[in-house]
Length: 212
Image (cartoon, rainbow, N blue to C red; front, side, top):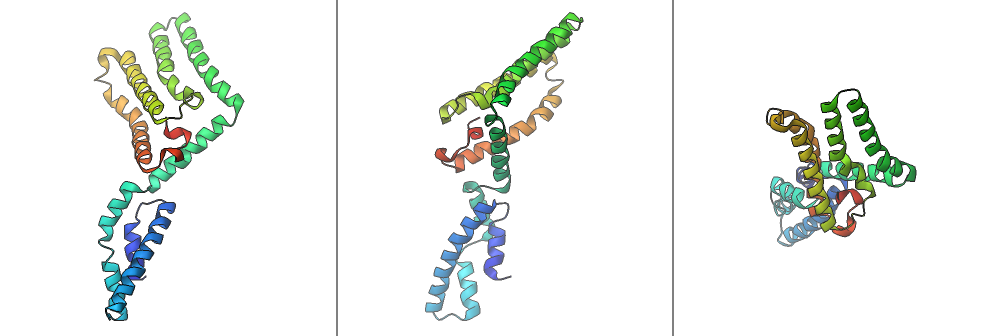
């Protein structure tokens, strides 16, 4: 492995495949320029390679900077998986109708059955949960195609989710906060990752699920 290969391996750690290729192309150009300059100064073959690589700077520092502006492996996976889900729903009209109508109807029907069988408290919780999760199911069908609409939707979404837990558990919310954290941390991680992707990609390149 050459010095340049070793430098690139460290500098592109945890970056997506496309980001790695972009970095390789840019660094190769800088490396060749630095190498030509070293040759002009009369450096030896080994010294030329060493000076050219040293001119690139510290690989770990470069990796930190690259991960701030280029997509990482985790971000690329979230972007890819989220797009597959959106395509699966939006490309099937019958599935869109099922999601829009079926889920609310199922929640109301389940709440009604529980209510008439005497499980009033449980029926209330089911109804509240259905209402709280409705933004998630309605998201693929809403006309959210601008950053401002996306911000409003995300605010409503998290208010609905948090409000659901507060209504269901009431005064016991603090006691059951561990359940809230365990349920929401995967969603929070995904939202954090999507926010990072939004900072790195131009708005014109956002797929639908990045607005949500």
